[in-house]
Image 1 (tube, helix red, strand yellow):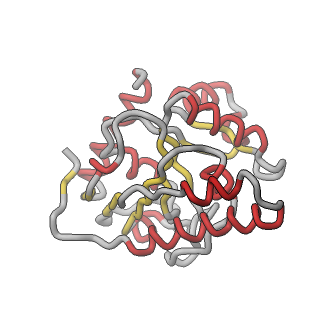
Image 2: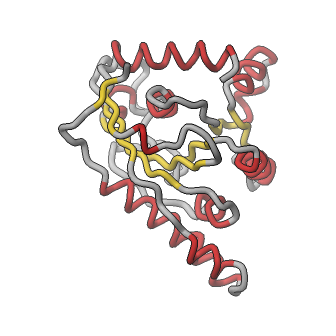
Length: 217
């Protein structure tokens, strides 16, 4: 971790523990080094902070490019491993940055739903994450955040001190589909992208809180 990321990470851990009374399950399932894709549900702006806080490694995040326009914001976001993404341009530059970071051994947090939920329920997965998974060779760890919609959903102006829980699942392996994708038709390839996205979303949906919890240290 660079210094800026480390300081932000410490603040995120403190806020998760005190303000949100955060709990994390099975953060050890995320490797401490090497490329990894974290795939999580998305209910709040604070989800990236809650997911990154219990991990003993730095994680890279995506954010809309408009947030980088101010020089200070541009410096700060980039120094905490944030990748700018143009939502209306097809995301080519963002995808290139994601693959470059994965090849360099980084961990990337992606939201299969693409945007924050409006009602707190899980949304259908979009195929974009399937493309990233198929074109990389990285394991995928499903992650589910509980309580962040109640704490700071998109309908709220300020975060509330509601309890949150983050649970990390077992890594998913898509070797067979990656192999098929090398030689299949374009039509089938699109279906594979969506199939991968749906399987990831199903894995997220199956995660539930459990009793053997580990608090944010």
